[in-house]
Image (cartoon, rainbow, N blue to C red; front, side, top):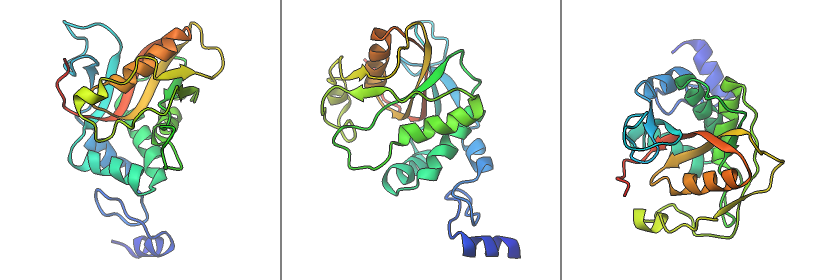
Amino acid sequence: MTIVDYLLHFLWPVQCPLCGRPASTVCSGCLDILLRNSRSRCFSCHGEYPCPLHVGPPLLAGASHLDKARELLMLLKYENSRSIGLSLGEALGRAFPVPESDFLVPLPLHRNSSRGYNQALLIARGLSRIWALPVLDGLSWSASWPNQTGRSAAERRQLPREAFFWRGPPISEKRTVIVDDVSTTGTTLSRAARALEKAGASVAAFVVWTVAEVKKR
């Protein structure tokens, strides 16, 4: 560590949670290493994409919902580390080529959320910096449905088909990329896709920081 590092840490007392570098909320190089095995997955079965069994847009998942990738997400969601969200989005943008699409659509916060910011929106803004796609924050929950966190896979799949509606500007014939922090069963993402399709748009891809390795039925 150099004297400059010490001075920076004194002025900005944070450090990268991956390598410990001072004055860095998280290093871009560390994130790129973490996502070195990222890949496009089948949205339905999490297998390789294109999938011989399922059709539809790919799931662009940075990493499995384990270890350091999961820890970073917990810092973003529960430790008010908002700047990490932008960095995660930028890392995803470097890890994947830009889909043929018109804009990014983040999943909204639950209506009863006590969090003062939307982590999916922050990730989408980071993606926007790399992919040069605008962010259109126009999805809304149709009611105060239970938060999916902590629910079983079976309970997650009970989320109503009309859980979301589009309240943004007209998007007929537009191509969208849906952005969220994590995908478990994919139910929330599929409900969001349904709302966009009802508004006349198509979904080019789903993008998430992590994906939980849960078998889909």
